[in-house]
Length: 224
Image (cartoon, rainbow, N blue to C red; front, side, top):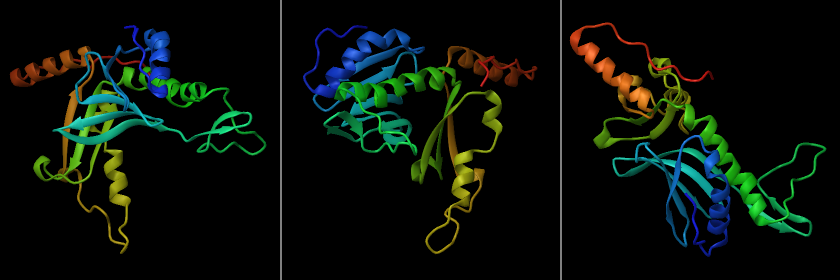
């Protein structure tokens, strides 16, 4: 997909030019669905519509929207650009001891290094190998509390304790009391297949469970 008409805002224009040159490098097809004066919206082809990408105000993120509500961010990168006599830098980056701050000849080069390239890497190394998206919230869906979402790579991970829940159980309120005292029974989960082979396997599991047959082996995913 090549965008011929370039947007006027500088960030949007820079991303479209970069995307035109690099869109074939994504292991998952990415579609530019909206370009406005406020930002750029993208979606992943053949993936659930609850996943979307938004680029605006020096920030790029992959977000989960569920039941009409913003739920969580699976990927979120931002930067604080500033101009120096020697080029552009990110004020949020702190160089290691003995090293100088990274400088870039243009603001576009800074965006590519801090936003566009990390997004490409995340898609190819994380999202492309995920088999499921688990969406969670404390309490029932109609009266939810804290919300979160996580990519699941291996089928065995679905039965392991949720790390986010374990972390919340360790958190303390200001008065020293536990922030959350419940267990997994107080969490509502939705598990959404992300790959065609995963969806086919889930259908096979449902059929075998109904007929009391042996479950098929889960799809083989690339090694971690």
